[in-house]
Length: 404
Image (cartoon, rainbow, N blue to C red):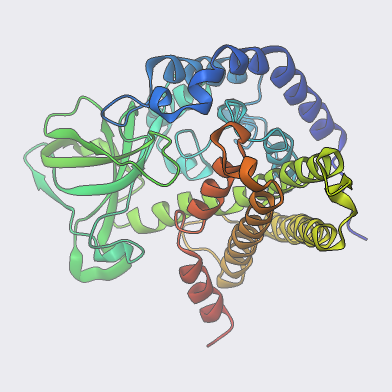
């Protein structure tokens, strides 16, 4: 029988997370409450994060790394916690059960290190990976383009050898952390005729000649984190390839798999947070001579949310345990493992969206209010169904693994 209860080292980490949030992050959230509930303050006129929010993110990231929490998912040999994917479910769940404020920045997301960076050379690990693990720097992973989208190999960005380096030309769109990254991992075509073996990944420092930061997008989340990167004869040293030439597509897909597996704990944690809010609100909101919670129509909405949360937890834990039995960080991953990871993402994305939609409805006018924080999670839930591979692409991958 498989025991999915968190082991002792995970329980210790979860306890540390809860104390960190209560003792350090909650006071910061209270201090920045006006910024967190007002997007006109949260963002500058150009769409970028307001300096106090950006400073808070950096502080939390650094403090979390000092406590050994920021990179629990990374191998111990590079300063991480050595946690398995199943372990990380409980870590992510513990953070997101507190909702959305500043606490999510205590864990590495797409701005931080991921397991595919173990394919860096030892020298590159010292220069680029370790500062990420320590929370001293952040990264951006530049894959998506306007024309390519989910069709990664449809990208237009090209890399050509020029003298003692590479020249990159193209534009990357909708890139998380583009505006703030110290280092950018870029996927570009070096031999377009070779298909998936024709892409190479590069490490580009934020002050590289020929690199410029384009627009900041105002997305459905309005999080100030999504931007455009423009490469105009951007010069990159020969030894700044991530992995070998021709491995860029596989390294990029591996990084995307890290985004997918995080969905389990994130979505179930946010789902539980919303369910708890709904139960508390309907028990205390008086209407028509009593609490709203006495109406069966509303009870069943909360029951359905309970079922969605439990289903997310069960599927995520089983999927992550299955992934732990294989090697998700290989260059070429077993199709059955891809099926498992894609199934986790698409199910959790859509289940959280249902829970968030019900939560807005159950809170009525207050659920639509920026002050509630509920409508923000609804917008995040809608957003999740596109990045990291759209839910439709997840279904395509699952169908392929089924032999369809």
